[in-house]
Amino acid sequence: MNRKTALSLTATLIFAAASSVQAQADADAAVALAKRNDCFKCHAIDKDKRAPAYRKIAAKFSGRSDAVEKVITHVTTGPKVKIDGEEENHKIIDTKDPAELRNLAQWLLSL
Image (cartoon, rainbow, N blue to C red):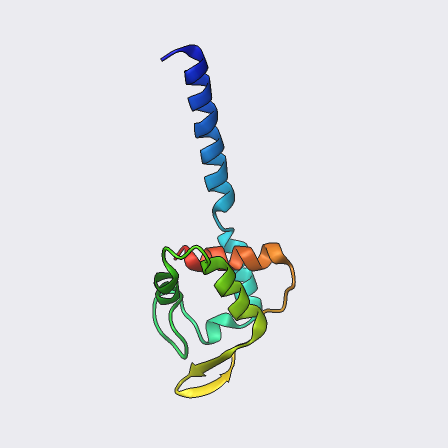
């Protein structure tokens, strides 16, 4: 391998690693936002409560390119959902900050 190819490969690997780190969610910030909005009243991470477990939701969206956008839409529009067999509007998250919403969705989908 010549020097130019080695440098190019190294740069590519560094860029890929940096992109991966940027794509990871800030779990502490996501959990804080979820707690502030009482999300854990109905959801748990690994077991169903009044609503599906976050891991079940993550599995449902696994591999979908539109997963983050779907989760953001769900938590910002208040669609009808079935909770304990009754239909009600899903609570709307109390932030309009796109970065916070994206982080919450990425965290949920990473479970």
